[in-house]
Length: 339
Picture 1 (cartoon, rainbow, N blue to C red):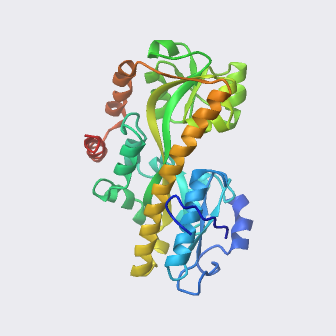
Picture 2 (tube, helix red, strand yellow; picture 1 turned 180 degrees about the horizontal axis):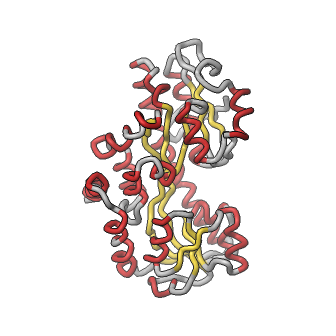
């Protein structure tokens, strides 16, 4: 296990099969830490060791190691244990213990998760974190996968507010008319691009730099951290603050494993997880500012938009994609928390 000390909050699939076997897949072969009833839990992550998610989760492992009877977290970054769809299934069957997965992955298991993927459901990161860690709002939703999939949702990490970037500044939806906007392959995201004024064009993330450079797509949408680290500012130097969506990753854990913890260890686990997502939010804010500074130094221009011009078409998507009473109740509760 690799644990780094960070004083911000906490001191102190097929390709995956061979690695899982080497790491001791399942409960029986797990690596025990500290001589108690717990063991080292394998956590699948699609980010690098420098990403705020890795740092916060690695420190989470340190906290558990110091405060429980042998529980720990071993974070496997860079999709070592498989992409998110694979990791989701591996957590369900117990081959992997925990994972960070996007909201769209859970939406495939329970359509109610679509609510927290909607544009403008969250005003900002602070509002998002308040809602997704409020059991009064999320309790039934997060427990909904336990019986059918053996997965418990613990909460999540922000992906930050997403905005549009292009080769020219954007002020209103009319400025995106006729432009192809790269989006994730999702019906909701395609509709979101249309609400922004353009045409949604699904494209693999790894192909986006070349796509922008060659004109296959005219614009894209993401957070500032990805914009900077992927050097997209070199080929799309105008960032326009549409703030149309606050992205979200969820922390999931195998339900049987979670229920096997003693009362004392579960309490420490919950405390450590709270510290981890709070640390992540702080680290994300720092990384966002560093990204803005770095992209600006590289020639990018950051500008505001006519927010009122975007508000109505984006907010109208809720009526289109909310189709059940439970979804509407979640949406109403999330919006009420902003007031």
